[in-house]
Length: 469
Image (cartoon, rainbow, N blue to C red; front, side):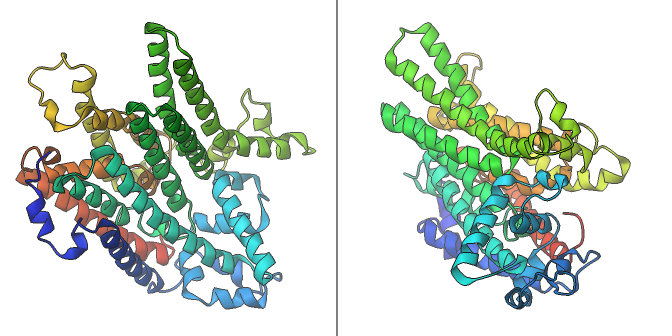
């Protein structure tokens, strides 16, 4: 891989210099977070919704302690607790009291509840305000670790032997810092934790893939199982984490084909068993919360709820459809057209980058199907990993367009690495094999400027408790 595009990039200020990637990413992260923090706490008023104040004020919450009131006067709780984070904090403090609260990630609220309980034992009674401070700190730490995980994942996929490869890895991680999720990666939301778990899962999975190709079957299988645990935890935080299970379904089909076409061996069967068991572990991220809810509402409750009678009972599907009007094409109304327009740039990038990954991989899957294809544009290993990551991301885009509250794609896309690589591909010029075109470089520049502008505008609206969320 050529280093022809490294000179212009490395001539920039040291903040964007990939020669010391961890230091540069840390500085960039701190500066960006400080900017977002200042924007949010500078926002005037509570906006049109006063829900946050009811979590802290003693006249509305007689159980609020004096310590909690002290925490409430800090600039973090009042400004960072907006929209869904009100539910997250209420659930962390009180458990799932209302059926509709089951729409909010079980894994994330349990993490917050565990931290709140630990703090209660260490330093005495607390409340929603102190939990908000802790949750905000957790989001910052998780986001930073997700940036480092994305950098390590990029190294696994593209290598770092040349200046161009190092630039690719650095820029991909840098884009995660300024991604459109913006304020939601700083506030008490599950997006940061999901990004950390999902991207780290991809990193461990890619390490397993490399180990298996190198003949290190034992370490490869161990890492494959560890990645499944991370994906399962990510699924418990956000249900779309289950899409990462597609990696294991694909691997299972490939392994079944090998077992069928080649001589049956203990190693092949053992590897297939690890894949299947790992896939089941990922499914637990959905099954365990549903089992807890089923026990609460369908077994121990005096009156059974309608969803208890379903063939496959799912409280999550019930509350999303019944209370939040989530379902196939339900969001396709005239009044929601502005939200579709808001989400369209990210949907376009997710879709285009998924198709791009397939374009990269096809020559390696069907080497004779296309003539005149420059196969030097990527290694077979890179192509295989890009192919695996393209399907979950592409499905996420389709589901967001047809079945979600579409505007949330701007924040839940933060946990998927492929589209970051695609934007870097535009500016690196076919991974350094050719010089980037002027149009592609402009596209990258426009995308970065758009991300920064959107994140800052979003921070103003978020801090003022104004839509869209």
